[in-house]
Every structure is written in structure tokens, then in C-alpha cells.
Image (cartoon, rainbow, N blue to C red; front, side):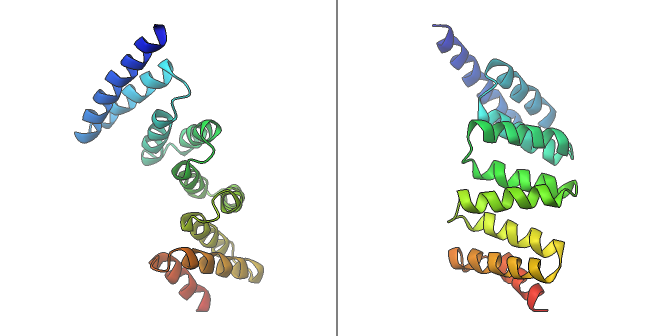
Amino acid sequence: MIEKELNKEIQKLLIEASNFHKNGQLEELEKILRKIILIDPNYYPALFNLAKLCEMSKKSEEAIKLYKKTLEINPNHLLSTLNLINCYEDINELDKALKISEDSCKLHPNKYEVHYALGRLTRKKRGIKNLDKAYDAYKKTLSINNNFKFAKFGLGQIYK
């Protein structure tokens, strides 16, 4: 019976959150997401959306913690993985971003986004070995999604 009441409370809060999001009331949205997490600390959609808000507000450290928590609960959540990579890149921790990218390519071998992230990050590191790795990652990206222009652009940069 108590769990049903908690679910109803979360559902009510989700409606409020949706309205705040639609109206661009991000501070109120953040408060609602935090309330949901207090009720259910493993409700990963709220964790993910709070992480996105933190990332948008340049609170990278908090966003990283929240994305990691989301991935503990749902290891296959691709957007959390990609956003975590971006957060590490934003705070200039390329090695951590690269490690997650490499692991993600194994976990999601058919997702062009993770291969593109790997290519982008390895190209940033420079060096012949990294250029080869970036080239391979961009080629893999395009073998999955031939129309992904950013991978084509990345290849062009390598050829240059």
C-alpha cells in the first residue's frame, strides 16, 4: 500500500516537472526532480534529467555524479554515457572521457554516437597513433550511419 502511495506521489511530481519544463521554469523543475529522488533514489529518469540540468548550468562535477548514479542503475542508458563523456571533456579530463568512450564502443557496438565520441576525443589528443585510432572510429561511425556529417568532417580534418 505504501509503495502505491509513493508511485502516486511520483506521478503527481512528474506532471509538475513536465509543466515546469514546458514553461522553462528550470529552478522549479530542479526542485521537483530533487523531491522525486528523495522519494525514490533509484528513479533514474529523474537522476538523468537533474544531471542534464546541472550540465546545462555548468555544474559539471554534480552532473558527473548524477550520470554515474544513473549508469549504476541502468548501465545501458546511452544518453547518460554520452553526456558523461561530454562532462569529462568539458572539465578537460580527456583520459576519463576516452576510457568511457572505449568501454562504450564495446557495450554499444552498433551505436554510431559512441564511435564518433571516441574519434573526436582521440583526434583531440593528437599524435600518429591517436590519428589512426580516430580515423578507425570515424570510419566505424560512418559504417553505421553514412549520413553523419560530423564524422565526415572529422575525417576531413584527419586528411588535412
